[in-house]
Image 1 (spheres, helix red, strand yellow):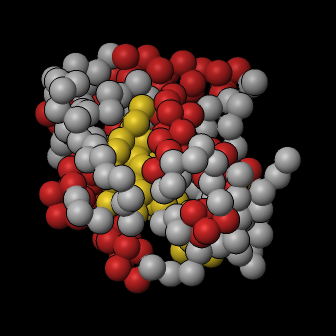
Image 2 (image 1 turned 180 degrees about the vertical axis):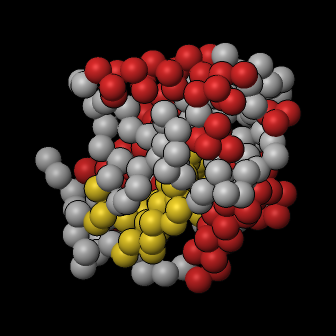
Amino acid sequence: MSSLLRFRFLVLAFMSIAATVPLRAEGGAIAHVQNTPKYILIGFVGGFVRRDNPHHGPVQIAEHMELTDSNDAYVRVFENRHRKAAYHIILHLLDRDHDGSLSAAEKDQAHIILFGQSWGGSAAVMLARDLNHVGIPVLLTVQVDSVAKPWQNDRVIPPNVAEAVNFYQPHGLIHGRRSIRASNTSRTEIIGNYRFDYRRTPIHCQSTLTWADRLFTPGHAQSECDPKLWGEVETLVREHMESQPNVAIADPQP
């Protein structure tokens, strides 16, 4: 790992630990468990943010979806380090006959949408890759100012993803992935790589920013709470739930 990358990694970790925003109690879970949900929506928060921190975009989207689509969707937000837990929950939800394994028909019925910010954006791509290994398709992945951990690759979208979109801002010590690409362009459509510039149009969310945010990564921090950006993410999610586009063909690997 280069010294600059290591420094950026440490700054992001320090910035997240320094957060002082009050957290909701663990008992206020945002997930609504259903036996056979039509859609599975999994979000990931960035840094060391708690999964129930109400000031962060992924949590806000999940709460909105819970209020309006709870009959059709299983919605849950995870810390980015709990990707494997999200993976096992997806397998459990898809196992409709509860026999401990997934049939081809159960996999084909999957309608999965993954989204996240910062390390959470990278976690969404990594989870899509985990699902690709076992032949499970994904409708959509959404990355917001995505930052990969040293052992991750958040740039290449696996072939089981039907559509993917990337939102990023280019400024500061920590900034998002500028572009993503499909590993197989015949299976995955990259909707776009959309740039947000908070130096030109700053977002006033100072009540949720710590001194570390303002000092080291003001643009990256603003991407967590930008209502316009997260409104576009929510619109994309809802459009995919309504239209049910053709899913990509997963590419199972041994």
